[in-house]
Length: 138
Image (cartoon, rainbow, N blue to C red; front, side, top):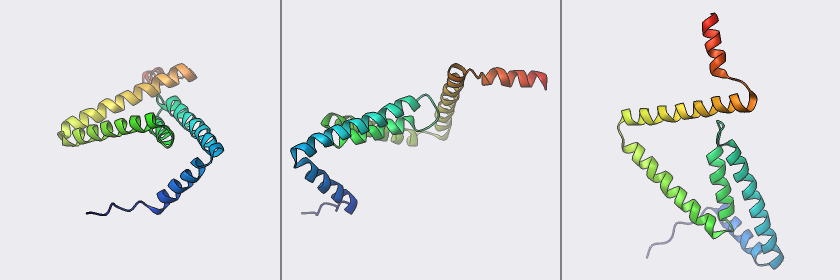
C-alpha cells in the first residue's frame, strides 16, 4: 500500500484552522458569511475586469476557489473549469506552430478589439480614429 503524498504544512494548518472554526456553530455561520462575501467580491471584480486587459478570468476563477472552501457547487464548478482549461491547453500544445500562431493572433485581435471598444465607449477615446488622423496628417 502506497503512502499518500504529504500535503504542504501550510495547507495542513489552514485545514486545521477551518475545522476549528467549523466546530463552533457561530464560527461556522461567520465562516460561511465571510467566504460568501469574499468570493463575491473577487468574482465581481473579475467580471468587471474581463473586458479590460488584465486578470479578469483569473480573478473569477480565484473567487470560485474562495467559494470552493465552503460550497460544494463551487468545488464542482472549479473542477469542471480546471478540467476544461487543462484539456484546452493539452489540445493547443499538440497543434502545429502555425495553428498556435493563428490562435494567438485571434486572441490578440480579440483583446485589442475589447480594449479599443472599452476606451471608445467608456472614456470616449477613439484610438483608431486618432491613429488614422495622425497618419493622414504626418
